[in-house]
Amino acid sequence: MKKLVLAAALALAVAGCTQEQTNRGVVGGAVGAGLGAATGALITHDAGGALAGAAIGGVGGAAIGAGTAPKRTCTAYDAYGRPYQVSC
Image: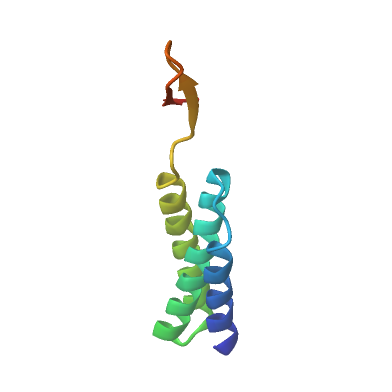
């Protein structure tokens, strides 16, 4: 049980270290899986519950992480040299 809580805390710490757009889905999946495993183990007191929680949390976390990734923008300049943002 302590290992699951430690793994969930480590996943949250790692999630705070990345800001790249491509990693949001992966990090979201890892955090979701860790928290889902901890929650499943706390609720069911069984390894099967921890595995089910990890699977459900991983899928949900990856979907949310990928869905909330910011759109990539580039800087363009108008005829007067003023910068503005455009999608790449």
